[in-house]
Length: 280
Image 1 (cartoon, rainbow, N blue to C red):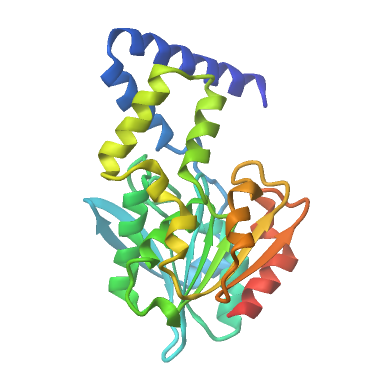
Image 2 (tube, rainbow, N blue to C red):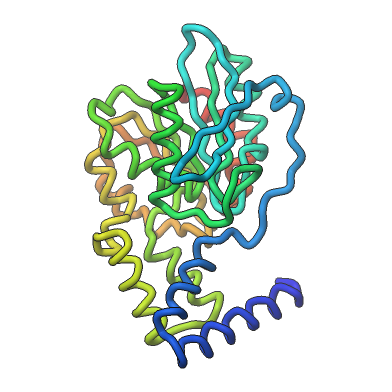
């Protein structure tokens, strides 16, 4: 970690600790805002394939979400869902290969990412974004997701009737919200009452215990054909979070476990990409 990043983390941590002394409620609200705000936006320039796309926008909770559409009459439709701090421009190789193989592709910059509006992204907002894509361009026959995109996809899909006819790709999905919270508070060196209050805030917003938002729970309600790719050395969404799923493997899930690709390089890996394209 660079010195500038360390100083920024120290500043945020100190600010929240002081705020928590004077107003625990404001401290929790500010903590949630930081938790939901990508520290950076992906700045990868859009490749040539994006100049061939039809560009659309949909309003999700009064937020403009930018969509890219590569139409093909009569073709199966695939949607790509990027992760936190990412952008759909990072998936240009997937888009190129899917189009070359005759698929219709729809992709979006999630709220707070890329060229879409607002600064924050929450799970309910991402789920609503997928719903908006499905309503405007559906039926979507397949999804490719990474990290936070996988978490949102799982919660979207468990509420879709007759989801057994879909194909879903989860690449290093954010399987446990509890892990994301723990990582966030460890990074900021925050503990005690502020973390307890934050967890209570999440429960209040979601009207469910935090464990409800586990991807492991949703998989019991998903009958789609699933390709799940995860790396042994992923420190963001650790393999231990999915070990119960692997041990209780169901026939509709194929697990592919890699080594040495971590959390972000995994979706860029040519072998992983080839596996995903073959799956469709």
